Amino acid sequence: VRFHPAWHLLMQALCTNRVHNLAWEEDARSGAFVARAARFMLHAQVEAGSLCPITMTFAATPLLLQMLPAPFQDWTTPLLSDRYDSHLLPGGQKRGLLIGMGMTEKQGGSDVMSNTTRAERLEDGSYRLVGHKWFFSVPQSDAHLVLAQTTGGLSCFFVPRFLPDGQRNAIRLERLKDKLGNRSNASCEVEFQDAIGWLLGQEGEGIRLILKMGGMTRFDCALGSHAMMRRAFSLAIYH
Image (cartoon, rainbow, N blue to C red):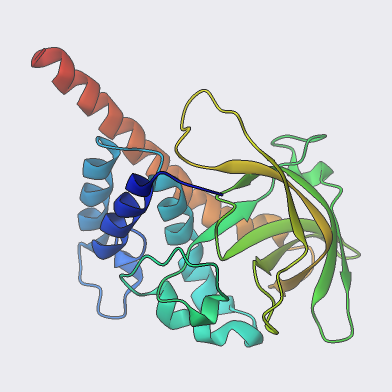
């Protein structure tokens, strides 16, 4: 996915100011959520699209700090860094990381219980995913949290862009969404062609785990809406 050079400058500014992880630092002080919210709202009045990867990374980080699969334990440092790294490299080799999510499928929309993507457990404990996602946010992310069906029910998987051996994961981008709004932020349709993922939590806990991430993103939706109303109000007053 190719971006305008300004996109990368905006992303670096967001990461430098830790809008993606301020509240999750070990030395985070009281009020970190408020400080982070203020930074988020200021940026939203300039360019809102670049906040989508920041929001999802912020929402996924506390879950991953507790549940990162064993082969990816070296991701903790770049997850908590203040660097933006757009290089196409395995996550453990990068200075900063982005995390996305993949839930929606064409036959179900917001009804994720009707998802048909299947995950089959392999001998090494990982899972093979076969299926699709109709709306796959931030395809340039280093990993996505993905919902898929298992024998134990709908489950949540950590699906990295690169496998531990350095090979690209079998995630095929079908097309980018041609969106009316939020165009600067890439969203796409993907196919999982024997992609490899790692189970987070237990089989059947997919909804519970993904909602932990989803709840955080809804908080940012409220912040972003407030910020855009403030910008519109300011433009009207000072026109």
